[in-house]
Amino acid sequence: MRTIAIAISMTLFAAAAVAQQAPAQKLYTSASDVQGMIAKAKAERKDQPTIAQNLLRNAPYNVNLEYRGSVGPAAVHEKEVEVFYVVDGSGTLVTGGKLKDEKRNNADNLGGTGIEGGNSREIAKGDFFFVPANTPHWFSKINGTLVLMSLHGPANAMMH
Image (cartoon, rainbow, N blue to C red; front, side, top):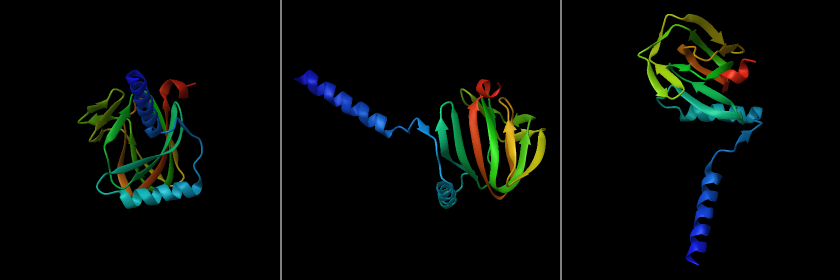
């Protein structure tokens, strides 16, 4: 009887853990949902430079809505490419160059306080841009706010 009780407890615990995980796929987000996400990010943002919320998910791809209210850290994604679309706002994007004060954030990403060198480009609503894997990138200037859609995917899958 005790074995059955333990098995039931373990099954319930596992089911609760699975229920708390994010769904494996999210294939649709409406325009009104996006506007709600922007409003939520605007209301919840305090001192953090960026609030990111998931728009779509279908492994190995992930699409986020990024609400940027101030300049944040620079980044290098070693195994991931990013495609950005500017939903609203404007700023300055720097790509290339070398990370300042480089540090390892995790197994696949580096961060820094900015970029030395690199190429600066003004970006604004409606612009698209691609950041290949292993490319330093940084939003060095935010004019008010910058709202982006970012598609993340594995470098090897997007190269073909």
